[in-house]
Length: 360
Image (cartoon, rainbow, N blue to C red; front, side, top):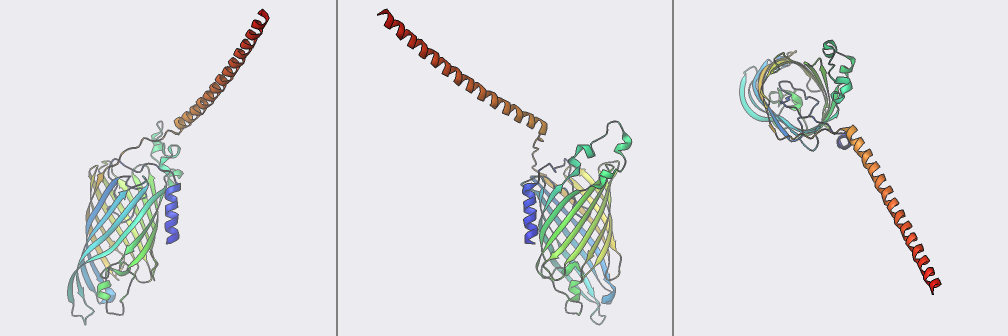
């Protein structure tokens, strides 16, 4: 993890900067994936939501729980346009029925802080800044509205961060962690572990966005988790509405699962977005159905920095160089002229002295 963090810091300093800011809010919700792009320098963004889940577990004598999960995601762009601080986590309220106790179905209600994350995301490559690749063709509607091979080149970001797992949290993302305690199914997890992600983002035909997250999670713990998320978003003709579908895979030696989700988002204004989503997994150990509603908003202190005109900058540099050379030549010429003038004056004085001597 130390080498990964060092590599991340080096990237921040050596790669060029270009703007990530957008005029309207750009939220990760209602999906679970991270987009490749940062919110922009001096933008503080909040993405919050409530998820209502109904779960049951076949191997635990159909023990079940009803869950309210309050999720938050705080994003802040700072230092450079491409850099983003990310803090996220959840607070859970569970009502569980444990059928492992001789089938008595003991009920328990509990509130607890779940997994918390802190990390940094940095955009290392943005193909959409290249006008030759993604500029608008003014003469062909067809060329502007078809998928091209160049669209297969994604924007690319990296993320590094740390996890904090409270004592009452879900170990390895297993929602039945609390019910399993004290049984042969029980498991433990380190309080602090690390996380790294590779994030790609494609834009197709203006209205489709494909995001992929390849996550290597719980680094330094006994069971590293492989997590992949694919999210496809479509913007409707009315630009205030968008839809999404998402597929997520979680895999480790303690708990593995797959999820599918579909959702809608509505842009209320440039700084507010509302969303709704439904999802499910594909197995009975456990089985999970869930619905989520959310809100995204931002505090926008971003200030536009005019883009650097490279050609103009080059021209100004050349003009400065020429001016410097001309000044040097003028100075040299003036120096030579003064030198010649001194010689001339010296000769005149000498000639005048000789003339005076002859007259005597």
